[in-house]
Structures are given as structure tokens and as C-alpha cells.
Amino acid sequence: LVESELGEHLEKGHGSADWSLRPLSAEQLRYAALDVEWLVELRAVLHRELEAAGKLRWAMEEFTALLDFTPRDRGEEPWRRTSGIHRIRKPRALAVVRGLWLARDEVAARTDIAPGRVLPDAAIVAAATNLPTSIEELIAIKEFSGKGQQRRSPTWWAAIESARALPDIDLPEVASPSEGPPPPRTWPDRNPEAAARLHQARALLTEISERLSVPLENLISPDLVRRVCWDPPAADQVAVQEILTRAGARPWQVELAAPVLVAALAESALERPEAPPDQE
Image (cartoon, rainbow, N blue to C red; front, side, top):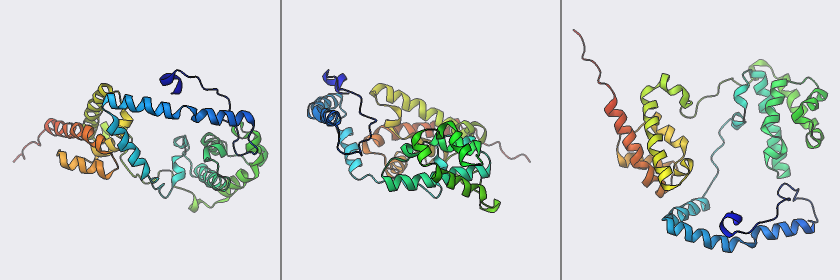
């Protein structure tokens, strides 16, 4: 960003360094200083660009939202959000995913390191897929061959061993209760009207996204669009605005997205065939 906006090139090389070690090296201190050297100038340029594009108010609303941000409740089974878990279809393997996820979460909290850096999701899925029967088999898996994973291998093996020893009754269900709409790819068969609403909404939102040079996912949450199209309110501006606002959409997002969603809902209703009259 500094290079594209200000024409200055920042030195790279220490982004993946271990910044928890002390003392920091002279190179790390220089890197950290350069990281903030141009922030004031960068802020001024971006402020002018946002103002010229008519988007400054949008940015200010985003900043205000961040001040009050609270993480979304992870739900009762946050481990089910492990990337790649869709490939795991057996309860025992899912128990391994759950055990490793919980063990990783505990290590991450204790060491104050991001969970993905403690143990990548890919490693969790690899262990669940291979179901090792010993710690030697575990560290033979490519994703567990690094020094960091070998150092923590007793922790990971303990989690796997516990999952392997669980009685069948304590194994997780293969399918978790759905907290929202099903995957859109299933909509044409399960709910053709919802699929039509989603198709229309996406097309109209894409037009706005391209016209305003705003990424589609920044314009409005894709998950929120899916929820509105799957279980729609009345095709009424006020009703849709209230739903978007309650879900956390900022005023600028509501202004742009609500009319589009209302139009998609209304068009879907117009295209819906009338039920045939009862035959005597």
C-alpha cells in the first residue's frame, strides 16, 4: 500500500520472525520502525481519495463499527469450522478433529499464539484422515514432521489417543445441526424460489460492486444475503432494512443493499406461478 500510494518501497524479511524473543535484533527494530514510518502520510492520501470518491462516510462508519466490535459467539461446536473438515465423514475421525482442535485451542490460549500457527487446520485434518496408532506414526505424517510439531507431539498424541478410546456413544454426529441456510448449490433442488432470489440478488449486487469499485463481500455480507433469500421477509424496504441493521450491517451498506434485496424478493414473487384452482 505504501508503494502504490506513496511510491516508497519498504524492506521485507521479518514479517514471519518470532517477535516474542528478546532482545529484538537491530534489524527487527528497523523493520518495526519502517512499518509505521509512513502511516501519517498514508492516512492523508487515503483520506483524500475516500473524500474524492464519496466514500469517506462509509469508512468512518466502518471505523465506528470496529470500536464496538465483539467477536461472534463461536457456537457449541466451533471445531466444526476446521478448514477441510468436509472431507471427514466418520465419527471416530471427527472425534480426532475435535480433540486436536480443543488441544490446540488450549495451547494457543496459554502461549498467546494464533491457533493456526500452533497447529494448522491441514495438520488436524491429516491426522483425522490417517488415524495414526502411535506417536511415531503421527510424526511420520508430513504435516507433523516440523520441529515445532514434533516438540508438541506428546500433546497432539494425547488428544488423538483420547479420541480413539472414546466409546461409540460419545462420538460426535457426522452432521451438525444447521445454524443457517444449506449450501447454495443445493438450493435449486431444495428451494427453487430461494435459488431464483439469490441469483437475482447476486446479479444486482455485482452490478453495484463493479460500479462503485467495492468488493462484493464488503458491500454486504454474503452470508446475510443468503439468509435473506432463503427465509425472506415481505418485499418491503423497511422490513429488509431492519433485518440488515439487526445483523450488523452499517448504514451505508443498508442504503446500497436493501433496495437491491427488495427488488430481488419482489421479482421472485412476480415470477412465482399461481397455484392451479381446485378441480371438482
